[in-house]
Length: 356
Image (tube, rainbow, N blue to C red; front, top):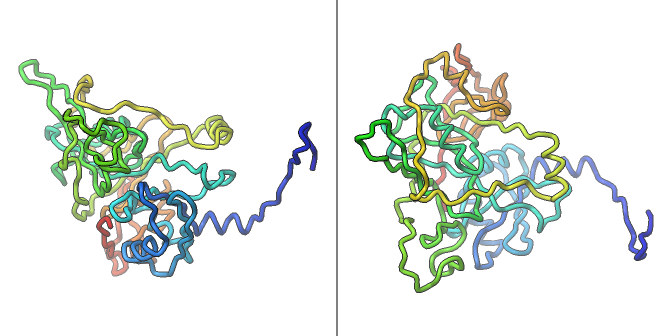
């Protein structure tokens, strides 16, 4: 202990390694983006119904609609994280792991993952490479619903998981530049699954048009946002999900620790006034798909799921995803993609929960 010139003490406090590990493995911190205060009882009841965890969990209320969720089983915590986003009384619950060295009010609740559907693409543009190009236009690309055979026609749209900056208007889509000079550029639209409270005036998540502080209340201008930007959760499917693992530079980690929060990339609204972008036609094959898995610093892996983002490692599944029976064996094909085995224990039992 020492003293500064202002006679203010500087303390070096102890850390309990066991306590820290307990918090890290069994707790989540969340903030409800609502102008109204939400009480703990309502949050507990709604989450209990939506999450359907095998073991109980507790909810502790802090200030400003911030809550601590403590789970008895770490597996339940991982399931809740993987199936984000969640909403409470139609307001987004921004849920994340606790961060060491960060005070409760200083946790960053400015980003949240969302499944985004990309509608309107020509058939020849429906491939994994283009899904990555589109995904990188967001805050961060987290996962791609992909087909290892190249062209992706299991659905009529591409489907990606991205991180959304909640402080900015959500992107509406983009103009697709067509090679033929005789054809006009094509508008490609985004649809967001489980999109909760949303402002059609400014395009931001966390409030509605009546309480918007970004646009004049008597303004009649067309923002371009409408109910069509919302999408129901995609039907269950056995389409593999590729998880994009971001490698963070050590220097970036140190800078982030100094400022007390993760660096946020500021991007402008993806309005219809932007320059059109060009996408490649499908030229992928079974062998090339695995080699074209992303830019430097990303390590994509694959896992079979039913609308669930599964964390995997290059050697196999490292985190048991919700909806896969315990003890399930994995079969790996020559392309490095994991699928459930045909045994009795390979039944997928995932029940997708609709947003509350």
